[in-house]
Length: 187
Image (cartoon, rainbow, N blue to C red; front, side, top):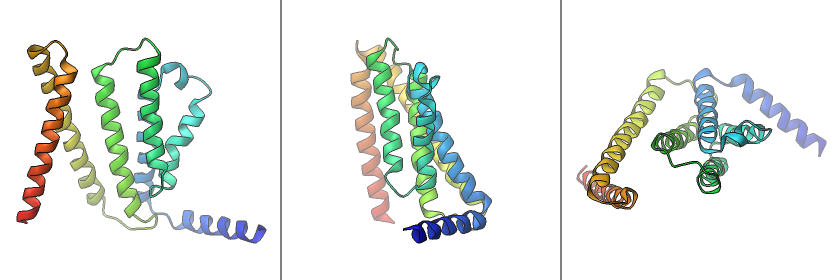
C-alpha cells in the first residue's frame, strides 16, 4: 500500500517538474473560469461564507482532471447555484447574469476540451491557444448579440418574452445545426 502511494507521489513530482507554461496556463484559466461562474451563479451570501473554499475546490478539480467527470460536476454546481439563487431567494433574473454564466460555462467547457487534448508537458505555440480562445469568444459574442436581439424583439411582440425567445433560440439552434451539417457534407 505504501509503495503504491510513493509511486504516485513520485509520478506527480515528475509531472510537475516537466510541465510547460502554456498547458499550465490553460488549466489555471479553466479553474479560474469555473470559479468566476460559481461566484456569479451562487447567492452572494454563500460566496462570502465559508463555503467559498468548497466552491473553489469544485472549480479547481477540472483543471487537474479535465478528461473526467469533474467538468460535468462543476457545471452542475454552477447551474445548481443559479437555480438556488433564482428560485429560493428574491433575486431577479438579470440579463447580465444569464449572459455571464452562459459565457463562463462555454469558456470553461471549451478550455476543458483544450486541456484534455493538451499534454501537461507539451510545447505549444501561443497561436494555437490564442486561435482557440478567439473562436470561443467569437461564438460567445454572436450568441450574446442574438440573445439580446431575440429578447428585444419578443418583448415588443408578446407579453412573455422568455417563451418566444426560447422558441426563437431553439429554431436558430436547429437551423444552425442543419446548416453546419450541410456544409460538412459538402466538404
